[in-house]
Structure formats: structure tokens, C-alpha cells
Figure (cartoon, rainbow, N blue to C red):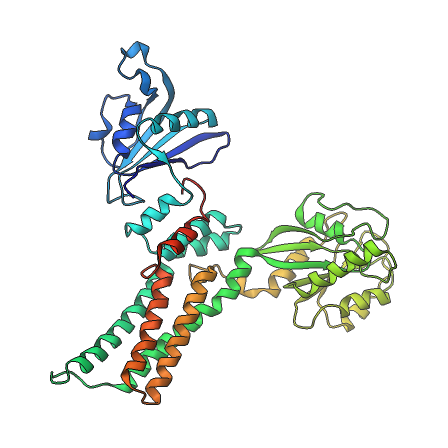
Length: 464
């Protein structure tokens, strides 16, 4: 990490402001060679975290008289000296105008000063390697960037604050105390050291077991929080499935016609309902058909139903309940939450709602064409997922890598507890506890090899 790196942190699009980040031992010197503050101060003497207004000068003309300087841009500059910076290194931020051409020119000038282009995630990787954050906090950074709901961003912010790392450190320290005592008693039998207290050890291990178990239980919920609830919109042809998709999205995503069987394939889009991100899947109408293309679409519809976390059955309120409606309802596995939507409330009603009530399914009436009743549908969907009503504060394990390591740690803790109860020799118990500590170290980054660390930070965008 001896190189000084730089990147456009705000992306390569036109914007009001474009930020270039520089980090490394030569960051301030490099920035000082292309930036001149309006008050004449050198960046070498500038105060930490103070904004200085000035201009970016083409390095090829900095030795010329003032009148001959080529100004690239007028901008703000801020420095943060090591170790009190994001990366733990000397860092500089140049807040320029957001023209991609201007930002590229500033980057070109920095490259002439020996600065190189940063790799994806390299700023955060340096922050981790320099001890500014543990691996759970580093991975929370990308979760914040990729968050699609307020709840997901708040959970990631809690993890960036250290919610997961603090719990892992507490568990790690408790195991360290146990293993240290074991080694002391075994290695120094003649010293006046308290003998093994099996019940005390078991109490600690059971407490860790509960803690890790609760953390693992949050992973399934977090996947839904991050990726959304796969929601299949199903029903017989021409009930208004595509119209409902368009109404929930607020724009015409799916083609809508009066011709039955228009939708031949699944269409997927995301929409936020309350705190719940739904991955809406508009499916082909379910019916008996000899059309080979339509059959393929129906097969995909059935696949979507079986993989769904929620199914919305759309019924045509202007027609009586049909066998195809009942067959569509029967196609939903009993363990998948479902709700029936009686559509076309703007037309004369022909569907007997008492029959729907007899089918033991929650339902509401809407007009997808006019957007009426969507608020009631939204409320019923929110009621199906009460766990999302409370916003998480970082306690949800959103990362599969972390969940797998915690699972290994939990299995090792349970093995150690069994060994203690069965009075197995201490060296076997130590192996299990050490395995648990290694797994926990993988969560926080205490025990990680370089190639895995590199793979983690490859997920990041350039400039973060």
C-alpha cells in the first residue's frame, strides 16, 4: 500500500459537483502540485478538514507567470492527515464541477505526479488494512451503497457503526478467556490456578450459542430485506395481472390488451410497499392451452409461484368465479403467503365475494385501471410481513460470507459444549473453541487471507 491512489468518487456522469479522492503518503504533495488556494496557503500547511477555495492548474504551466497559468477548474479542496482519515492515510478531496471532461483532466494531472488509478474498493480496503474499520464495517459500506430501501440503509448504517463487530468481539473475548484458562491449567499444573469450572464454562458457551443462533436467524430476513420479496402475480388470462403490475409501479411496464394470453413470459420489477421491497413478477395466465409458446409461459408461471415469498391472485370481479380461478389458487403451495385481488371494481360486479371468503384467503377489491383500492392492498401486504414494520439497526446479518462463518462458529461451540459434558480430554475442547475463534475472526477480518480480502473488495465501485 505504498502507492498513492486517486479516483472519481461520484461516477462518470454529468452532475453539479464531482469529487476526486486521493489517498497515500504522497496525496497532499500531489494535490498541492496542481491546486492553488485563493488565499495563497500551501496544502502542506493547510489545516485538517478545512475547505479551501482555489483553482486546478495544469502542471505543465505551474512554473510560468501567473497570467500564463492554464486553469482547469475552480474547486474546493480538503485534506485529512493520517491516521485521522477514512483510509488511515493522508487523503485529499477535490470538489470540482461535475463535468466528466473536467474530472478526467484533473485525474490526468494527478497521474503526472505519480498517482495511480484506484482499484474497485481500494479506499475501503486500505481503511480495513489500516485498522480504521473491521471487515463487517467495510462490507456494510457496500450494503449502504446498494441499499434499495430505507430499512436496508439503516441496517447497513448500524453495521457500519459496529453493531456486528462489537458482538463478535465480545464472543471472541469470552472464548479467549476460556482458552487462556485451559492452557494455564494444563501448561502450569504446579501453579496456584483455579481448576476447571465446567458449569461456568458451559454457561458461557450456552450464552454464546444463543447469541450466535439469534444472529443466524436474522440472515433469512435480511436476504428479503436486501433482495426483496419475490411476489408472483397470478391468475387466469385477462383478469388484469399486467394492469396491476403497471398500477403498483406507477408506469406502463407490461403490455396490456383485451386479448387473453398477451403475457407469454414472466416480467420482473421492484416496488417499495411500506418498508417492504417487492420483486413483482407478472406471469402468464394460467389455463388449459395447446399453444406451445403459451405452455412454456405457464410453466414459468408455476416455477415463479413455487419460488415466491408472496402470491397475489388476481380475479376478475366483472365475471363469476371460474374453475380456472380455483385451479390458480390451488397451484399456490400452502406455506406461501397469499392474497386475492378482485379487480375491475369500475365494472358491474358479477363475482360473489362470499365464495372468495369461503376459500380461506385474504382479499380486497381494486380497480387496477383507475388505481383505486391500491392503498388497501398495500396495507394488507404490510400486515402479512409484520417483521418489517420495525426498522433494523444493524442486527441483521445481510452477508452470506458472514452467515457461513457464524454457522461454523456455532457448530464448533456446540461441539465444545458436548465435549465438556462428556468429560472429553481438554485438548479436544480446545480444538473446538479455537475453531470457533477462527470462524469469528473470519467475520471481523482478524483471520483472512489476502485473496479472500481482495475478492470481497472487488464488489465495490471505484472511488469507495
